[in-house]
Length: 143
Image 1 (cartoon, rainbow, N blue to C red):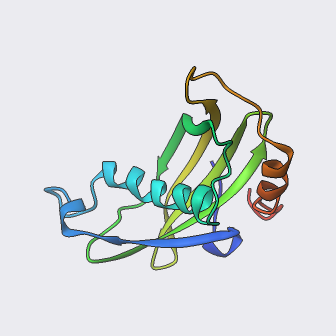
Image 2: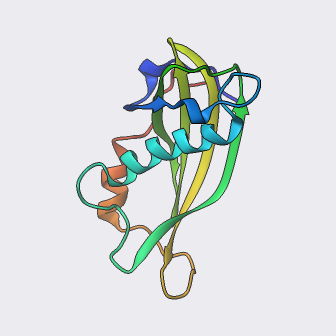
């Protein structure tokens, strides 16, 4: 996937690692990684105070590719970097990194699609949404 540093992401947030996130081996269970990624996605999509989707629509995950790089341990926090790889007609592809003590522990690419709530069919992003999203596009330093 990508070689990452938290500083390259336009949106940074964090989550607290809970004891309940750990497994029998004493490290954070793989399922918790998806929850941490969700924290970054939610802040990205809804953190500006107004949702980016149309009123009669919502965003759904179409694809999630998660690569584990290192163990994540309790106690502590996980830093979450989020940015956009591309903006499509009705979808966006996010790149996210999870970091602990400045070390990348996981990388994820997630495609989300705007769909009509009544039908579940994709619907194009508004021009306004595309303009707002453009500020989150990742720069060339992400490989």
